Image (cartoon, rainbow, N blue to C red):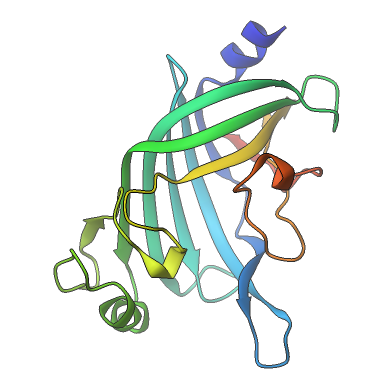
Length: 187
């Protein structure tokens, strides 16, 4: 069954529309700030992947703020109880992790928070953050970004795990998602 799931995962996937997730950042009243994004995902042979995420300042995707491009490997960790055929997967961004500011406000933020080992941030220009200290994303020097997630495929839709409603990332096995988020469709 796992080989079947791996085969059906291969290819290109994309968000249906702008998605909303809770972020780890809070508004002044203590509520979590919304995080708007679109995903382009490629599942490649040999358990490799590429993921491009575009973040937006608004729910309609009219004001892009940043783009991230991640390349790495997937580890299959066994069945996930959310649905028959769902699988636990770990995504490790061990090949590339690039960030591009698409908005001057985000560029200014990066120039204040992410100076060490980076060139001056410019809107529209990518920089590789792989294994570098990157405070805006909570990454420490030498750290490789990894998420403990899930994949469930049904009717040409690929579901990943829904973000924890308290904004916690999928940074440990204990934080692995227990619900499904909005699916991507084949591109």
